[in-house]
Length: 498
Image (cartoon, rainbow, N blue to C red; front, side, top):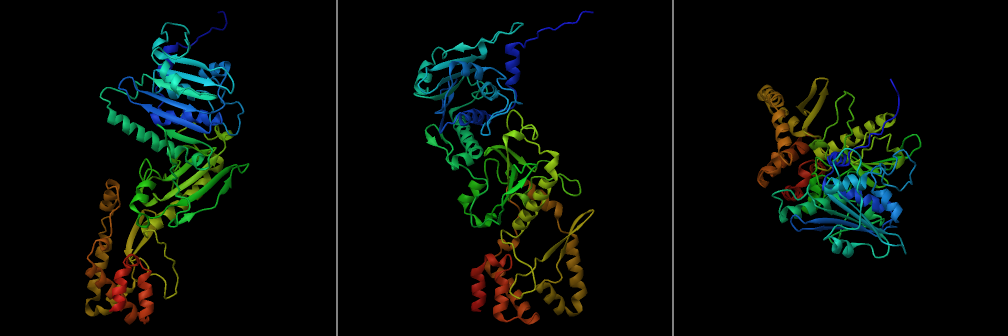
């Protein structure tokens, strides 16, 4: 048997059609093109979406350093870079595939025009409809724009230096039944994604991104500097070279936000979906990683759920860590290396616990202690056991103690009633309602009429003064720091008048 080497070049059409199914969305594909612009030191990137039915097109133009003819030809090749090569620390690419795969995922025609400062404009084009499907390699790269597209390229091409990327024949976007209204929604989704992905780079002035001529405003998932935040932690350094940064943010409870702030802070995916780790490489958001499949001490995977939706954790990694973090070609997923998983688990556990407390206390973390002016303990206490968590009515609650002391011969019946209430808490129903509704169930006191809430406050006030020998001022101060009465201070004023 003879031994030798054979050449097995991929069939161009078949390979490219396969690459189109990598999983880009229009927004992530455009973000990948913008990465190239930022790596080319662009200060301004203009994204243009033009609706014209089946002739609709998308362009991304920047004022970066541009490319010569040789550089453009290399950039248009698939696999132009070896992901193992050492790169500049500011480089946002890795595989040398983003320009092509991102573009092919949305369009069948890719035209790139570029110019270096004082150089000659160059233009190359891939047209998937022209690739030969016969056996062998036929990678036909065309020079110049397609016939009929000259005006688009000439109208948007760089005047002095920079690059234009043009997508035409948007067969993955303008599908049958796709209308102009759909195109407007398409534009909104792109704006939301770019505002989130590049928010740090836009905020610090690294780049200005416009969509159809209008500047994209950054969306800050961490609400930096908001006075209602429960925590804006310090920047922690992890990793062998201390090159990984972690910063915990616990956002304000919804009761501490205006309607406009609440809607804005929800983000593109909504409050529950936006929780967890935000992984950045060179300040560019790589992945909204959720809880990174980390597990608690019982081995249960952390999940996205309502009680922890206020926790958002910034995680900075350098581009030299791409391999260790398994950054995929879409720049959409990342897996932390084993060496720091324990640290991240501890940070996540603490963040989730704090977020849960803020969520449960409606944004007001009440201190505990023995001072008479501190808040009243919650009437419900949680007890965690190996087989789950149970809930009990706190017997040391002032009103509960007052009722039991005054119950006389009915004390046993009252205690039996408390045990019945404890034993029939509709935990599964509450969990189901929380899962199905956009907002968690509300306390009935939130909807009670003022007179009913005031009556409850009066009974507690009496229990403080008569049962605990507090002065009227101390009793009122305690009520003013106790949830949910601390949110009804106008009723507390009425109680003070009485």
